[in-house]
Length: 417
Image 1 (cartoon, rainbow, N blue to C red):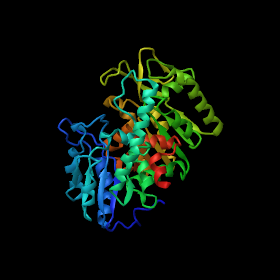
Image 2: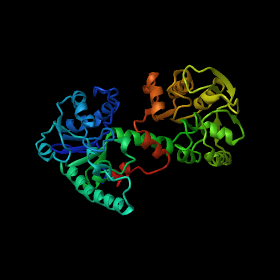
Image 3: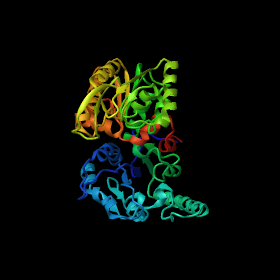
Image 4: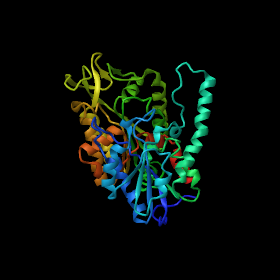
């Protein structure tokens, strides 16, 4: 049975909390962005304030074995600083029973990187490239068998389980989904996880109309399922960025050297057809800022998006396109934005994406509900100082994508039971 963090009594209890502390580190192991640590603090502090103790678990990077550069020791100081208590450290997440048992109310313990163990992800490691199918099958079965013991050990440290790691909610890993089975009556979402789920529900299930989705990024293939799900739910579907050129070519347009995926032209035509049948306003770019090479200082010129010369490449949405989109955005009550509408990493081709961020801030001010997710979209609202001027900024790229594809996330389902 799912509990709620606000009504749960943590007095004298040990809570094992899955967080997403997979933060970026520089070459000297200094944290370059502590957003994920900061966003988990309300949940962690709630446990301590309620008279409980904490066992914090996370992954960092993608180690295939024990590797010091992926140690959570590098972030221990910052976690302690944010939490306001000296957090203890367990050098091995599987050998922390004594430390966990000794925790007193108000104390906290951080476990070493869960992914030092293959059992966390449930995938075999170290297989030879020429391994036979039987060998692969046996290795997978062995990991799955040991994964149960791995999960059971983690669960044995605590009295209750909290999942506050939305960024990994789309993975059915030991610490994100399987462990919940050991806490049938003492499992719950943390505040961050709850906020993410509510934000997505506000768009997909409880949206005020008109509902607009702005989907950008480089490739249709990376967001095909998202587009197919959204076209049946939204009033307006804005498609920008590199993926837009596949739609333009599907209509017979000339796109020059612009990024496109010929094999997905049938899918693009199907999405456009469905949008028309459902009365959805599918809005593509009408003009594009083009360059002659993929470089910030390349010559720039604006062309109609369906008439780009052979030696030019579409790189950003032009003012005419942005003006069209601004009218749609400002007339909407609910807006989802995922993905840039230009080559955001190059400053001379980032203006379109930054303009979308500005428009969303204005729409929010006017009373619209705005949800932003995806690395470059989040970077755009953050760089412009607009992160607190939209309704919600999602921390989970892959998890958010799968949620708006309409998939049930294992980490969410495990709590809801």
